[in-house]
Image 1 (cartoon, one colour):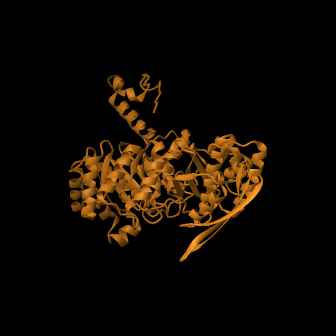
Image 2 (cartoon, one colour; image 1 turned 90 degrees about the horizontal axis):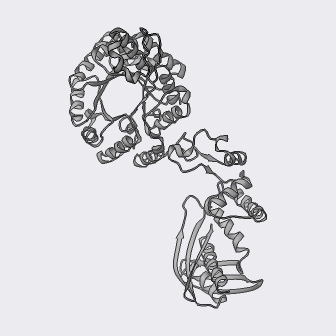
Image 3 (cartoon, one colour; image 1 turned 180 degrees about the vertical axis):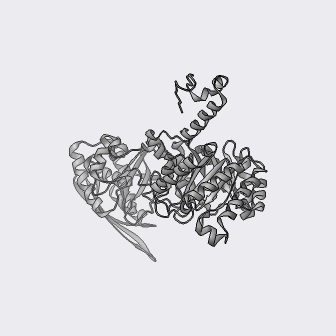
Length: 541
């Protein structure tokens, strides 16, 4: 943050990062004022990731210690400032995970969660003994509901317990974070009393959670603002947000908190967490990157977001919804013809984020019945197929017919269409193919070929339907041909999807590669064989 001033005791302070050079020239009282102002105005937002603690509380998301360490290392590479590694007192597994993560990561702060209970705090401190930068995260509920029903206590007793737990944690580590659970539904005046008390007790970070996801963004922002304006000593600590997504406002609340003075955002990868989840790391990081006018920066290497998202999704068995912001598979997908044309002309027409900024190679032009010629041409060219206008028009007509049958036309479909266009110029063409096969009967294939305008037919049996089809073709084409390689790639996305066949055929001692794609794998095999044969015919002509 640049802090320019001509009016502080007549001295030009200049860049605040050079404050030590001016320390002797400025009265101590004035310097402290500048220091407090700088902290409040700091543009650095610290990312506190709780994927391994709050995120893992989702049913079915349990990770073992080795997996947690692997995720923690990825979070370190992503640029996360604080990793909440677990709740050590909850289980031996959590305790061990905090120990091993503390050993595995180098520069991030490693944090362990506790209740406002001395035994919790002591065990957390023990689990953190190998951490280079240990932090104990302790706290207690402060809302009327928590005080009355969860603790059967009074506001004054809760206040004393809050002070006591911070002081006890301070005996083990210098960095103590206090959480006021359900702060979102806590009266601001009482919350301010608690926050001020724990700061005086030694807290370095104070977490203001919207535990139930209840607050409106304006309400949560005003809560942070109230604390910044009414708590003595608040500029000496970092205020954190921890928002849940029960009403779909976790990210909005987090941003509102940051815009009103909070400087730590508690998040999870893919927004996983209790109930409807937490604020997602990727959303906060990309919002701040996209809105430079907020003057709020993180240490996140955004180009690693997509890979970390996929890893967490896979390891925790938590699929990412297709329309999830930033990391959903449709986040950079366009199916409308108008949108596709706009994006192909200028990405910024419909995209505010470059996919490469989050580690995705490119946007996805999803081919559907709504796509135009420009989208089909773009996809063909990206696959190495170039067509003149007349050929493209014919291919587009076939594309629309196929698109009406399928929800999405994939690359293999496009290659099939391109193959049909190419095969139309081949000397040998497949007129028809009929195969009979089943359990207990020998497969038989009937084939019709068009060779330079002349029609030929043949039948053959084989060890399987593909073998029968190839044998029938060989009966018509009386040349010595040997299949050397035969690769079938089947896709399991649905019954309408396409299989690809790659085939190497030896003819007169020379290998020729054939390719075909078809929703019928037997037809694709026959077409791939003929593709290789046609290349042999051309080469020998």
